[in-house]
Image (tube, rainbow, N blue to C red; front, side, top):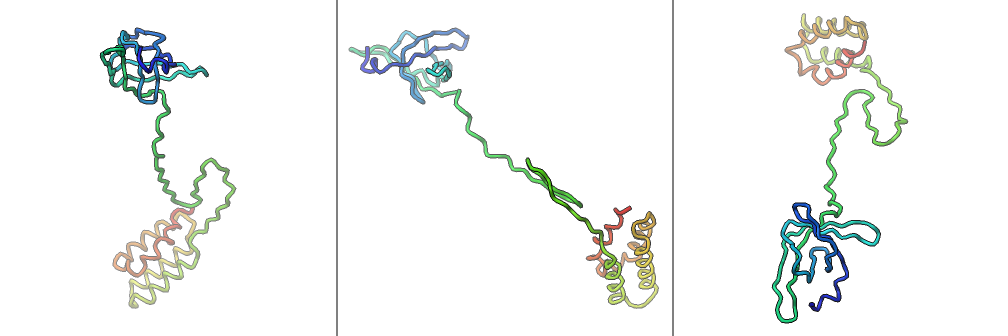
Length: 197
């Protein structure tokens, strides 16, 4: 009997790797250790202790180091086992980062919510055609290529929203291949008409 015997008010079941059990081992259980004066218990590294709490919850501890100590004088053989509680709640991982890329008209994200928003989409206004025509007049010298480009812009403005707009757009882009710096900033709004049918 050791000086700690009176403090041993826990009872655990030893569970061996092969499934064999040894119930009612009197001990002291702390978060990282189980100490018992039962020197005859066959405790080995890798075994498990189960402790049933008064509320019915069962805690399970894995033996990391059995910690057997041979007794001397009035102190009996005993174990001071290093353990790890395996039934504790796992530490939460940091939340995964979510990247949401949103593109296009009326794009939206709702996360556990009701969407009451109203989106209004306006295509490129008629001013894009006028802006391109003005840029062509200001930056291209008079000649066949400027006249052809202005004619194609006028035809595209009339054909917007029809299937023929795509063909006119391609002809315009071919005619303007050498002059992209003039109309480059205006191509985005102009291209929106390709999707309108």
